Image 1 (cartoon, rainbow, N blue to C red):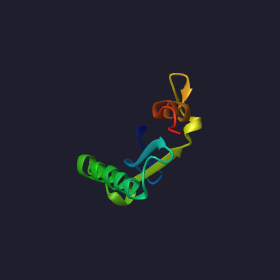
Image 2 (image 1 turned 45 degrees about the vertical axis):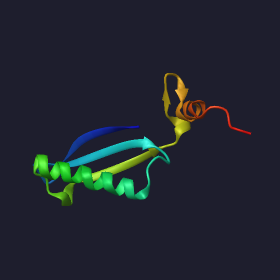
Image 3 (image 1 turned 60 degrees about the horizontal axis):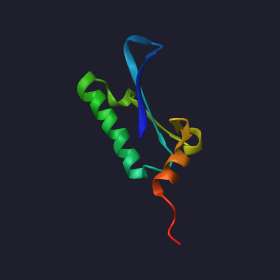
Image 4 (image 1 turned 180 degrees about the horizontal axis):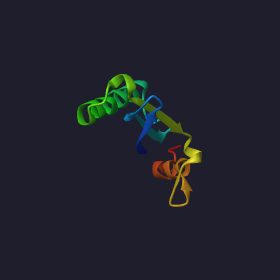
Length: 90
């Protein structure tokens, strides 16, 4: 579950070759360090392959959002996930 934005920010010294900046927003705690590393590498590889960008200037940021601060259908993700778990077995 997450959102993805692809933006290019022009470099001050070179407007012809914008610097790709990728921001990935995900719910906090759903991805391991290894998974986040794979996302960073994968996003970089796509921009190098498809847009011919130099990987030195591709920036990928993963922003982990607390589930209390992210909602859907008027309910926080924390509440939605608790509801999907059902009552705890005692």
